[in-house]
Image (cartoon, rainbow, N blue to C red; front, side):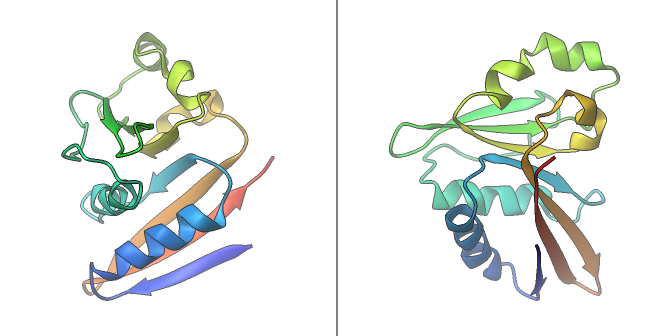
Length: 141
């Protein structure tokens, strides 16, 4: 099953994030899309809906940001854009995060596909004429 959303206003992302959090039992979300398409913006909406009280920002240079929600659950936000080899990913101890019971939101996950669990939520974002198309699919292998 694939869901498709046509988004003309950023405020629509709030409802979509809430819907997806309620729809899926998985906590691993992989985000795909060109630079500047809105991956981090969408992740911020997910974090808002999870009650994250920290400032959500792109972990482009730190690779991972950890946030706490109002209910004290951990939320992890990864950005693997700047990673150059799998050793960097191993060095941050990615398995501890990915295989935990916490929510994990990953940008540029294509850099570590063979290291990830086989079950996840795939979110592809496309931007055309200031309108976003978001395709969502639950992947079970």
